[in-house]
Image (cartoon, rainbow, N blue to C red):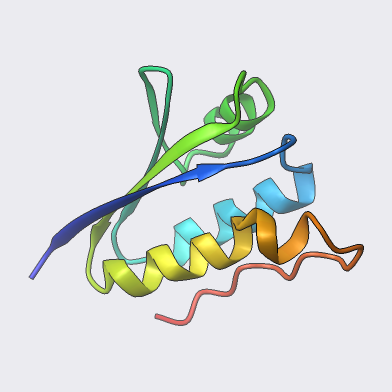
Amino acid sequence: MLEISSTSISLDHPLSLTEILSMHQFSKFYSGTIYLLEDHKLITSNHLPKLVSFLLTSKNYEISIIVEGQNVRQTLAKIQAFLNPLTFRKSKTKRTSLKASF
Protein backbone atom coordinates (compact mmCIF):
# COMPACT_ATOMS: atom_id res chain seq x y z
CA MET A 1 0.00 0.00 0.00
CA LEU A 2 1.36 3.40 -0.97
CA GLU A 3 1.55 6.14 1.62
CA ILE A 4 2.36 9.84 1.49
CA SER A 5 4.00 11.80 4.28
CA SER A 6 5.89 15.07 4.51
CA THR A 7 8.06 17.16 6.78
CA SER A 8 9.79 20.54 6.69
CA ILE A 9 13.50 21.06 7.19
CA SER A 10 15.38 24.29 7.91
CA LEU A 11 18.97 24.36 6.77
CA ASP A 12 21.34 27.10 7.85
CA HIS A 13 23.43 26.88 4.69
CA PRO A 14 23.28 25.07 1.33
CA LEU A 15 24.22 21.42 1.14
CA SER A 16 27.58 20.51 -0.32
CA LEU A 17 27.74 18.72 -3.65
CA THR A 18 28.77 15.51 -1.88
CA GLU A 19 25.70 15.72 0.35
CA ILE A 20 23.45 16.38 -2.65
CA LEU A 21 24.92 13.35 -4.43
CA SER A 22 24.30 11.23 -1.35
CA MET A 23 20.66 12.34 -1.26
CA HIS A 24 20.31 11.63 -4.98
CA GLN A 25 21.80 8.15 -4.58
CA PHE A 26 19.43 7.43 -1.70
CA SER A 27 16.40 8.49 -3.76
CA LYS A 28 17.46 6.35 -6.73
CA PHE A 29 17.33 3.20 -4.61
CA TYR A 30 14.12 4.09 -2.77
CA SER A 31 11.14 2.21 -4.17
CA GLY A 32 8.90 5.31 -4.10
CA THR A 33 9.28 8.98 -4.96
CA ILE A 34 10.87 11.76 -2.91
CA TYR A 35 9.80 15.31 -3.72
CA LEU A 36 11.37 18.57 -2.55
CA LEU A 37 9.26 21.71 -2.32
CA GLU A 38 10.42 25.26 -1.70
CA ASP A 39 8.71 28.52 -2.60
CA HIS A 40 6.23 26.87 -5.01
CA LYS A 41 9.00 24.91 -6.79
CA LEU A 42 8.56 21.15 -6.76
CA ILE A 43 11.13 18.62 -7.98
CA THR A 44 11.77 14.90 -7.65
CA SER A 45 15.08 14.09 -6.02
CA ASN A 46 15.98 11.31 -8.47
CA HIS A 47 16.74 13.81 -11.27
CA LEU A 48 20.28 14.96 -10.44
CA PRO A 49 20.56 18.20 -12.48
CA LYS A 50 17.27 19.52 -11.08
CA LEU A 51 18.22 18.46 -7.55
CA VAL A 52 21.58 20.25 -7.71
CA SER A 53 20.02 23.38 -9.18
CA PHE A 54 17.18 23.35 -6.67
CA LEU A 55 19.38 22.91 -3.59
CA LEU A 56 22.16 25.28 -4.65
CA THR A 57 19.76 28.09 -5.57
CA SER A 58 17.42 27.71 -2.60
CA LYS A 59 16.85 31.15 -1.11
CA ASN A 60 15.71 30.59 2.45
CA TYR A 61 16.72 26.96 3.02
CA GLU A 62 13.20 26.06 4.19
CA ILE A 63 12.50 22.86 2.31
CA SER A 64 9.49 20.57 2.51
CA ILE A 65 10.21 16.92 1.83
CA ILE A 66 7.35 14.75 0.57
CA VAL A 67 7.77 10.98 0.40
CA GLU A 68 5.40 8.78 -1.56
CA GLY A 69 5.75 5.01 -1.47
CA GLN A 70 6.20 2.33 1.16
CA ASN A 71 7.82 2.77 4.58
CA VAL A 72 7.48 6.56 4.26
CA ARG A 73 7.95 7.23 7.97
CA GLN A 74 11.23 5.31 8.04
CA THR A 75 12.39 7.06 4.88
CA LEU A 76 11.54 10.50 6.27
CA ALA A 77 13.33 9.63 9.51
CA LYS A 78 16.49 8.74 7.58
CA ILE A 79 16.34 11.95 5.55
CA GLN A 80 15.68 14.03 8.66
CA ALA A 81 18.58 12.42 10.51
CA PHE A 82 20.81 13.27 7.55
CA LEU A 83 19.57 16.85 7.22
CA ASN A 84 18.78 17.68 10.86
CA PRO A 85 20.68 20.83 11.89
CA LEU A 86 21.04 19.59 15.48
CA THR A 87 22.76 16.44 14.28
CA PHE A 88 25.55 17.98 12.24
CA ARG A 89 25.54 21.77 12.08
CA LYS A 90 26.51 22.46 15.69
CA SER A 91 29.31 19.92 15.80
CA LYS A 92 32.48 19.83 13.78
CA THR A 93 32.04 16.19 12.81
CA LYS A 94 31.39 15.24 9.23
CA ARG A 95 27.92 14.20 8.17
CA THR A 96 27.33 10.54 7.43
CA SER A 97 25.89 9.64 4.08
CA LEU A 98 22.40 8.34 3.49
CA LYS A 99 22.27 4.60 2.96
CA ALA A 100 19.40 2.92 1.18
CA SER A 101 18.30 -0.20 3.00
CA PHE A 102 15.18 -1.22 1.11
